[in-house]
View: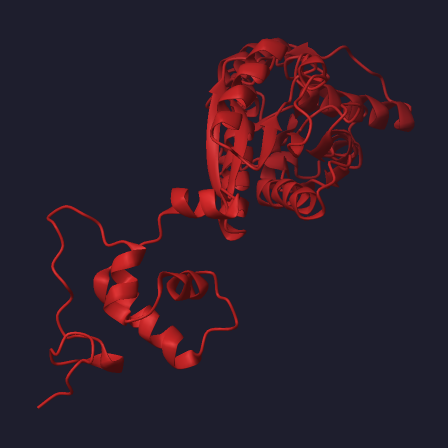
Length: 357
């Protein structure tokens, strides 16, 4: 016959806990008081166990953990936030878009936050301007977020970032380095140079460019890198054609470029537009890479399966996310909203679309 609980005179099981948990009203979740009563300890002891306080005896800690498991207790994060003053939540202001770069940046931040033990609350906006950002931050502040990441890849974001609330750590992701906040960004200029130098090294006299929208800081950086590489090599700089990041705009640009007989190398500012360029070249019977070499940017999952597989510049969005969360956590730990500029280097991924002539 099993032992008898000193608490209620009923048979006990593991660590002296009653074999049968006490009945609760239907639908009510177990509370910290239920755990304390079931384990035969105080409310404060349960709190110490949940907060991993070192002063709790191991046998007591084991009883409390067993009671938590048997009751199916889950800590109330809101109540714990009120008690500790910490919500363990980071806010993100993100552009309402399905474009690969912003979406991948958002995923990188969420993954890094989760690994660091933080929740993420996202406010999507239609544009990164002062009014939209101010309203988004107001909504996040109402949720008591501890820090805010703003995915701000636009030139006009500088104005939006100049009037942020004091005290809350803020990071501009892909933001303007001249902003008055910390910035985490991929070196877009280096990526543009990398792609262009790669094509020049394969014997092409110059490299044509399909640029992204000029209001995007990333597009400006990639174009600047392309231009720097051409000027350094003494190559002709032909004015770029502008796209809008979509495959359709790349296709339209590709139709123009395919008519230029001596166009032998094209750097396209993202992989979706590169897909459109490849289609236009195919329709004009310009072979890739035999007649025209093509390099994209981003290394989307499908890039390796284009025909031919696309050489491209990879951005490490997981590193971007990790750096963003680290900057916010450091500011929370030190209590100092210092400015920091973290630059992530891109990587050239070589595939068949740019093979040597």
